[in-house]
Image (cartoon, rainbow, N blue to C red; front, side, top):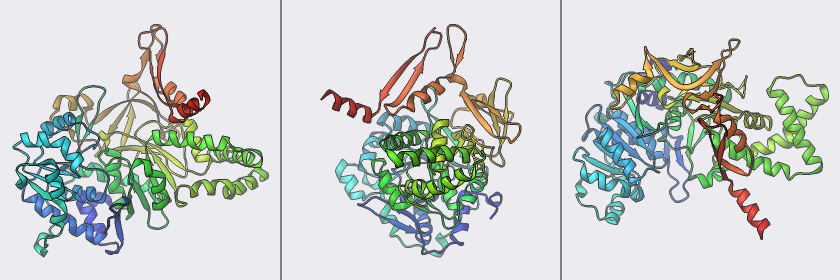
Length: 521
């Protein structure tokens, strides 16, 4: 399969439906109250059915707002919008009423897909005001939603589940041949350093281009049908684009119930590959460390040997015969037990969405949880580079993906060029021109490229550099990472621009607060 030959993401999906068993499960929600499953065939038919209804209400290029928690219907809605010629505009479920108002007024969606009553409450007032919104589709039962909110104008509301019960004729099973690689696939709103969020327009070709590199990273990790657990918000570019990587490798996709149940969901889904952000790994590092430090005697010695020898292996340092023997022993006695806590089938964590601390990266890799750090931005669809499993350098973000051109400007800023670069910011021509010059995206990140192997290293964020009263350039991120490595600290922020000293705001961890309360008792 050559991803370069596809014109759209929906074309990729339909191609894959012909390769895999139509009765095998593609999507499954781990919500105990609604454990829905969809086979490849059911997913395809439901996309056709929903698309038929959407096409009755939108035209090519219209925006469609999608507000929902992670669930199989999210994927079906996303692809149905694309098949209809629309542009998906995903929005976080955590947005306030004012956030939704800004987003709706900015992108002017013709259609809104919303999951449930709680989400609709925050959208209802704005939806009522806007004549450009023709229809609202609810993923949960429409009668329940409409009656609970005493909604007027019920004719504008459609029930997702009723739509899926509609008949489908052969003439309705038509792919959209009008989509090109340059066609907009989605508009993902991303927060800047200040002001309102900007809508980043990503193309079908940009995401498909990104999948080439993603599939190269995943290839050595897959020896049977891969399993993914989706838990990061699908409204984030990282997870939104990841769902197409899942399709590209024919994965089975589980949707987590909620963050509080994540570890239970991991045990149930038994994922092969898991994507997460640095905050997840930081919390994981602290929790594992707390448990490991409680061990004594032989157990403590085995754990120390696991970490020490794991780091040696990671750094490709030579081991003595005895060390090799010990490493084989702890692989069974320690690492295997740790892996089993994550379902037993985990081949790798993939980290993105921020800088992963070197100490955490080394630790996780050494205890048998391979962690591949990558780098990207919403504006690059979203991945620029990633560490491959055969050569992990934890203090870097790996070599650039195939199709991505990366260079370092004179002032150290990382510049990216390629099909994966966004089409632009929605309704913000000037801001687009400020960051894309001669085809090069100015990322705002400072970095360097290793001339020997081409690995990219992020050293700072251009706008975040603190310049002290003495003229020293200080990286707050490095200090914040060191502070947050403490189990007692959940989050931190360092400040000191123009001062002759630094200050930090510290948010203590729940574990630290609980321990402190016990001591005070």
